[in-house]
Amino acid sequence: MLFDDTDDEREIRKKKFVKNLKISKCDTLIKPLINKLDLFQHEKIDPEEIFKTAEYVAREGKKIIDDFRKRPDVILAGIAMDENLYISSIGEIGVTVRKGILTDAFSDAIINPAAEDGTMSEGVSAIIKNSGGSDIEKEAISKAPITNGKAVSTSAGKLTCRHIIHAAVTKGSTKDYSAELIKSALSKALELAEKLSSNTVSIPVIWENPEGTSDPGLAEAALEAIKSHTAESIDRIIFVAQTDKEAKSFAEILEKYDEEEY
Image (cartoon, rainbow, N blue to C red; front, side, top):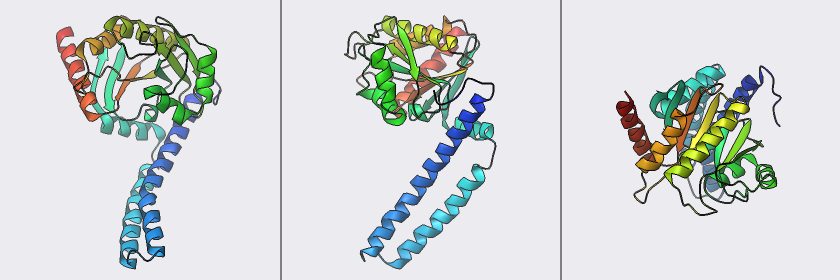
């Protein structure tokens, strides 16, 4: 495991998460300048283009430096305010919905919709493996089969979360989702997250219908799993969708769920 289970290990992970985020933002900002320098060296653009881009990079770079002088908690709170499309609670657990990359959300545990054999070659699983390293997959395979109704945990490799929780949400290796399977898998995953003393859990929004929006029946099954869960350590769940369309539709489903509950 990358981090020891001590009182301040979460603070260590926050600092590492923020550092990685700063590097990523700087890399994104500087790449266009590098590309233009390459074009300039091959006499394909004028010097003025270089100076304009360099001026922009310097100006935006100062903003990044100023932003990242804040405390990690302040930075993370700012990210949540910018990215969360909807904020609610189910029982004692805060629930948020955002569009983004699952591994970019700071949390203690990430839930992975697992293949029965533990392989992580497609979809959300591949994103987790690509960001965290192949050791996650090797460990998941060693704990296979991951059958429906079962959840297993592995280390998180290079990621700043503590655990990856692998839960089977389909029959076999197909995307044969059902409300019953979603609820069962998520319930088992949350139970395991509690045993691992997780405070914040990130969950991918995977119940997309042919229109590219969240399937109401499957989405509500996930919410029902949270409702029936008795929270101990978990105090926040972050649902992360890969597209704006799916994130917005799931936020609408959660909002409607709130209205019906209250």
